Structures are given as structure tokens and as C-alpha cells.
Amino acid sequence: MSEMITNEQAIAMIAELTKQLEELKGGSKVTNDGMKKNQRPGKANAGRKYILLSKELKSWGKVPQQQADIAKLLSKNMEVGKEYAESEVFDMLMEKSAEYNSLLGSKQDPTYLFRYYRGLKNDQKHAGFIARGFLQMK
Image (tube, rainbow, N blue to C red; front, side, top):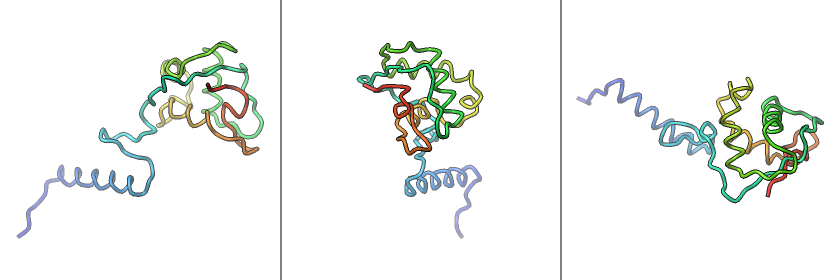
């Protein structure tokens, strides 16, 4: 006769198998603490700096609400032409993101969204902060 497993054991086994399946599929990676990587605050690169080039995000093409809100947040908290460390930018995002519904309601961490929209290339439909001439990265 086989051993019976408890509900708790079955749930733990399912969670572990789900984690392994996500890793195999190459999708959103689930970390040991059970959170997906895009849901945790990013680690700032000590050598990376940003300069705000304009108070307005160029709005040609499609601008998702989260990207527009991050641009508003940064333009309110940064001076044009001044250099900011990535850690300072991440602190701004963490402190002020709750003021914007699109960021507050997102499952993704504001630092993850910033990094995504920072590097988005210009494909004539979408573009990131750098491609739109909003930020410069050093």
C-alpha cells in the first residue's frame, strides 16, 4: 500500500513543480522566495548614471500609461541636465510610484518597469526613454 500525502505536502510539491516548469520554459523566473523577478525591486548599478534631457516625454507612437507615469514622476523629481545615480532614480521610483494608479496597481516593480522602458528601441511605434530623447544614460 502506498503512503498518503497531506494536503500541505501536495501543495508544496505543486509549487515546486510549477517553479521548475517556469524555469524550463524560460518564462518569468520564480525565485526562492516565491516572487517573480519582475516583482522584486531591481539592484542599482553603482556606475550607471542618468541625465534628464527634457521635462516632456515625446508622445509620438504609442506611449503606455505606465511609461507616461514614470516619465511624469521623473520629470517632477529630477532637474534637466543634472546627473543622477541609478540608486537615486530607483529611490524616487520606490518612494513616489504609489501616486500613480498604473504603477500602484501593477504586479511589476517600478524599477523593473523603468529598466524595461529605458531600453526599448525605436520601432516607429514604441520607444523607450532614451530613444525618445527623455533620458541619457552614462
